[in-house]
Image (cartoon, rainbow over all chains, first blue to last red; front, side):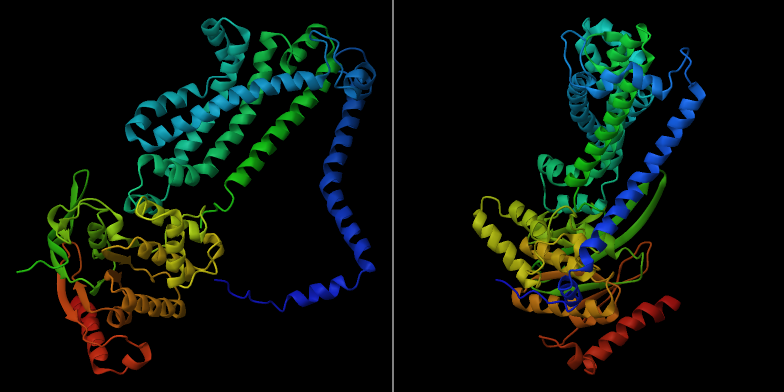
Length: 291
Length: 261
C-alpha cells in the first residue's frame, strides 16, 4: 500500500533560485572557496609561523636540532620520493610506514576482538567485574616499552613480541569503554529482550552489540592511537623494516633531519588512523543517537 | 468458583536492599476476564507500575501468585506483551524492524518469512504507521513512537496486553488521538488489557473496570469501579453521560478526598 507524499510549498523558492543561474556559479564557488580557506588557512599559517620561528632559532649551525632549511637540504630525497626501494632496510618512508601499519592492523585487530569480548564479560557479569577490573586498572598504566622485555622473554622472536606489545597497549581502553557501554544499556532494552525471551546469543547480537557500539568505537579510537604509539616504540628496539626502526637507525647514524621527516609521517599516519576509526564508527552506529 | 482468565492472587512484593526492606504491594487480589479492559489508577509511587511489572513477570512476587489462562506467571514472555511508558524502541532499527524483531521471535517456525512480513505490516497498519515504516525512532514524534510500541506488542498476539502509562509522556491532543486508536483496536481485536494510568478521564473513557489503589507503602486495592458505558464510546458523546460523569466523580473522590482524610 502506498500513500501520496505530502508536498511542501517551501520547495518553490529553491526552484526559482535554480531558474536564475548567472550569479550562482560565482556565488557557489566563492562560498566554497571561503569555506576551504577558513579550514586550510589557519593551520597553514600557524605552520608557517612555527617553521619561521624554528628556522630563526636553529639558524645555519651544524650542531643540535637542524633548521627546516637544513632538513630540506639533507633529507631532500626522503621527502621527495617516499617510494624508493634499494633492498634491505634502505627503503622510502612509505614502505616503512606500510610495514608498521601491517603490524598495527594485525595487533590491533586481535586486541579489538579480545577487548570487546572481555569488556562485554566484565560489563555484564558482576563477579567478572569485581575480579578483573582492579587488575585491568593496574595493568593499563604499564607503559608499552615496559612490556617489551617481558614479551621478548615469552615469545623469543621479534615479530610476535611487537604484536604483543601493540595488543597489550591498545586493549585496555577497548575493554574499559565496552564494559561501560554494556553497563549503560538502558533497562528498557533489557526488558524488551526479556519480554521477547531473546536467547543469550540473540541478545548479544540484536541488543547488546548495537546498544554498545558508540562506546566500543570510542574505545577503538583511543586504542588505535595507543597501538600506533606502541609500534614506533617497539620497532625501535626490534630492528628490521618499519618506521620505528628507521627512526632508531637514523639516530645511530646521526641523521636527525631524516628523523624529523619520519616524525611528520608518523604524526600524519596516526591522525589518519584516528579519522578512519572515527569514520567507521559513524557509519556503523548510524542512527544510534540516544533518543 | 471458576478462575478468571487473569488472576492476581494475594500478591505482595517486598524489595530488599541491604538491610532495609520496603513492602511495596500488600495482598493484591484482582480477577480480569478475557476481553476485559481494566485500568489501574493511583497516585505516583503507589506501586501500580510494580504491579504491572509483576504481571509481566519482570519483577518476581514475594507472596501470592499471578495466574494467566491457568498457568502461573514466573518469567517475562510475549504472551504478556508490555507497552512501556517511554516506548523503548530500539534506536538502531527502523520502525518496521522493531516490530519485525518481535514477530520473528514469537512466530519463528510458525509463520513463513513472507507471512511474518505481512503480519508486521498488518500491525503497523493497525496503528496507522505504515507510511513511516522505514524511519528510525529518532525521526518520528513521541506519539508515533508509542504507536509503534503498541504495534510491536499487538504483533506478539499476547493473551494480555500490558500498558504502562502508555500516553503519560504525550501532549493532550496526541494522547486523545492515541486513546481513540486504542479503543478502535480494542473493539476490533477484543484483547484483554491491563493499563496503568494516572489520568482519570483516560481511565473512565477506556476501561470496563477501574482499579483504584491505595497509597504506598503497603499499597493495596482500595476500590473497584465498573464503567457500564456501551461501546464503541465517543469521547464527545460520553462527556455528558451521567455514568461517565458519575464514574469520573467517584474516582476523583477516591484519589483526592480520601487522601486528605
